[in-house]
Length: 215
Length: 215
DNA sequence: TGCAACGTCGTGAAATTTTCCCGGCCTTGG
DNA sequence: CCAAGGCCGGGAAAATTTCACGACGTTGCA
Image (cartoon, rainbow over all chains, first blue to last red; front, side, top):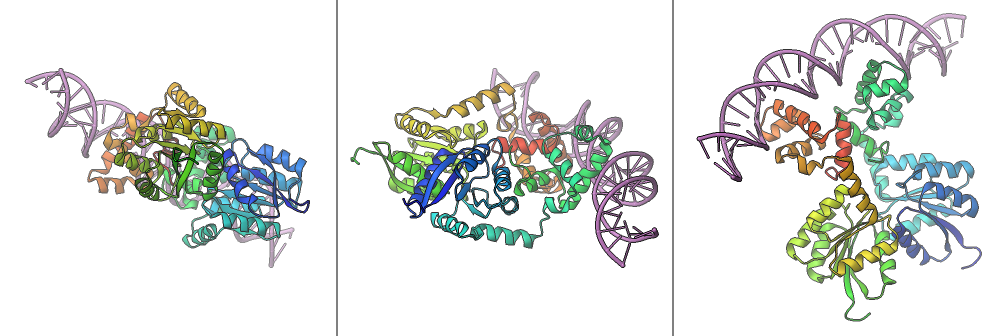
């Protein structure tokens, strides 16, 4: 390996998966994996100490997740190049990741070549999105499913978060210091704005859009 | 590799992850990966043609999932040895997998040694469960969270499935040829039996227990 | 400046749903 | 034969959801 190799930090909470990254990337000349992290906090720490040219980041991880880790790293270094590599094949996560500052989004179902290609693209300063996600994004545009983050006001979004966290109407009213009636009204309004008829649909939409991650 | 090596079939829809398995297992003498599949149907086909000593199987895959693949393979060969290796850290999936006929359940967060150890144990005829899942199982027993599959009658479970599939009360009544009133009554009874107060909690419990997988 | 648009909060009343209690019907097992 | 329990639904009370409406403050823009 020459000193001019591009240095890479791998972030994934599954050690066997990191092993897979390594194996794929090693075959590619010009790349060198210099560190691995198993969660967002460790990733942030290692980014600061190792200053890699590229971060390959999973999203679902214990503690602070991938999106938040992307945000923090980009806050510390506006030029950081982060490629998100995840199992989530829905557009909501991709939008969130890119908005948080990721320079690429590739799904784990993609063949190794796609990952390698994306790594090269991001290193070259391009934005890399895997084809399946491009397709998802197109679909979500066509189907016209409202993006919660876009159509909801801050207050509504906050209530939605609390609802998804399994709080009762009364508990939410309590924490927000408003009348339970207001919460109920907002709950109804949220469902209306998002175009869902039941709480069950609401939860599933939230999962699709990455508002609700853990179960 | 000697002819006495134990043969292994890898099943995972993420190619980079399969690459990781290979890398880890290669280091272990006496093991040989002879085939890879990316979904349940392919796994079943390859099992029949290759007759591996062990199958390492992911759960979440497109088409027929891992649980169903386990069931089919075991139906074809009662002696099949299948080790489930998945990201899902909840007890519900583990119970389902073992009941379907898996001989082991290891999470992807486990260190490579745990996977290797489990592979050896299953090949030796033992049942292998990773420590974190043992712990989860213990917790679920303590917390007393009701297992939907156990406490619900077949009819109730069917209604639950339909509810989770985003059907309205009327639609379910239609498909089951009963009165909407009955469905509403069952809906209420289900929530009572499972000890949840809202539909949102209901969906999240279903996710935890693996009743609802796709979003 | 003024005012239109919008977010936030809340009330009241109607509409709907949820919940609880009930009885009837059927099957299963002792 | 009886007891237990799953399945089906009616009736009525209780709770929630929904809709219409108004007040208040902020923002943005003509």
